[in-house]
Amino acid sequence: MENKSGISLYVHIPFCVSKCTYCSFCSFVPHDDEMAKYLQNLIKEIELVGKKIRKSVFSIYIGGGTPSVLPLGAISQIVEMIKKCFDVLPNVSITIEANPNSINLDKAQEYYACGIRRVSIGLQSASSAVLKTLNRAHNWADFENAIKIVRSVGFEDINADIMLGVPNQSMSDVVDTLEKVIALPITHVSAYGLILEEKTPLLDKVQSGEIALPSEDETVDMYDYVVDTLSKNGFFRYEISNFAKVGFESIHNNNYWARGEFIGVGLNAYSFLDGEHYQNTNNFHAYCKKLSENHLPKEQEEKENPITAQNETIMLALRTTRGLNISKFNKKFGVDFCKKFRNTIDKLIKNDLIVLEKGFLRIKNLYISNSIIVEFFE
Ligand SMILES: C[S@@+](CC[C@H](N)C(=O)[O-])C[C@H]1O[C@@H](n2cnc3c(N)ncnc32)[C@H](O)[C@@H]1O
Ligand code: SF4
Image 1 (cartoon, protein in one colour):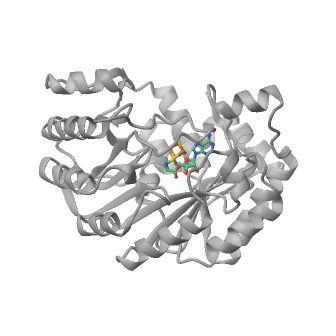
Image 2 (cartoon, rainbow, N blue to C red):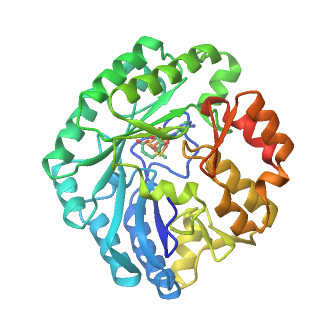
C-alpha cells in the first residue's frame, strides 16, 4: 500500500560476520575500528539529510549487511538520531535485519526499547549441509534460539528469510525447513529463489562445474511446495517472494513495490525522492571522508525518466498478488492503460495468463511473471 503523505527511510549497515558465497550486497567483514568509524559518519549523514527533508517518515528499515553485528548501543543511537533529525510519525514501523548468531538478549532488549517492532532474521535453510555450502555462520539451533530471544523481549512481528534452488538443497530439505519454520512463532516468510550474482564465489564454482545447482524443474517444485504449504498454514502470498499472516505485511516493502518515495542513508544506499534517484558511494573510505568534511556521500543523481518510471511501476505492481491499480496508474502517468495495451491485455486474458477485475490487473502464475511483465514494457 502506498503512503501518500510520507516517505520511508532505509539505513544500510554494511558489516557481516562472514561473507556468504552467493551474496553481492554491499557488505564485508569489518576490521579494527571500522564499525566505530562508520557509526560516527552514519550519524553525521542522518543529521545532514534530516535537516533537508520536510516529509514525514512512516517506516524505517535498518538493513544490510547485518545490522545486529553492531555493538550494543549502536542501533539505539541510530534510531534516536533519526527521531531527532526527521519528522518521524508516532506510529512509525521500524524493522531490523539480524543474523541468528549475532543477536543476543541484550541487543534484542535494546532494539525493542528504542521502538523497533519488526525483526527479520536470515535462516535460508534448516539443513547444516546447505548452510555450509553457502558459508552461513549459523545452524538451525542458532535460529531457533534467536526466535526464542526476540519473542521473550516482546517482538511479535518476525520474518524469516529462506532461499530456494541453492546448492546441496533437495525437496526434503525444503519440506523439513518449512515444517520447522511453521512450528515457530513466525509471522512473515520471504522465500527467495537463488540469483547467481556476478563476481560471487558461488557463480565461479557453478561455472567451473565444482558445484551443481538443483534443476529448474526441482526449483519450481520447491517454490510450488512453499506457496502451497505456507498458504495452508495461514501465510498469504502478497508478492512473488513474500508471505504474511494477516496484518503482518511489510509496510516498508509495500511502499517500495508501490514505487513510493524513500531515502537511503549509509554506504551505497539508494534514494528516490521528488522524481530524482540518488545513490551513495560504495567506497567505505570515500564515504567516511566525505562525511567527515560535512559533505553528503552522493555519487550518482539522475532525474526520473518517464518511460522507466512507467515500466518500473508496472513491473513492481505485477509482482504483487494485488496487481496494478489501473486508475492510479492512469492518473499518475496521464495515460489510458487499457487502451494503450488493449491487444496485449486481450491476448493474455485469452491465454488465461492475467486477470482484469475490480480495476486491478494481475498475473495468475507469479512464477512466470517476468515473461508477462515485459509484454507491457515500452
Ligand atoms: C541482504 S540479506 C540481509 C540479512 C542478513 N544479512 C542475512 O543474510 O541473514 C537479505 C536476504 O537476501 C537474500 N539474498 C541475498 N543474496 C541473495 C541471492 N544472491 N539470491 C537470492 N537471495 C539472496 C537472503 O535470503 C538474505 O537473507
Ligand atoms: S546474505 Fe546477509 S549475512 Fe550473508 S553476506 Fe549477504 S548480507 Fe551478509
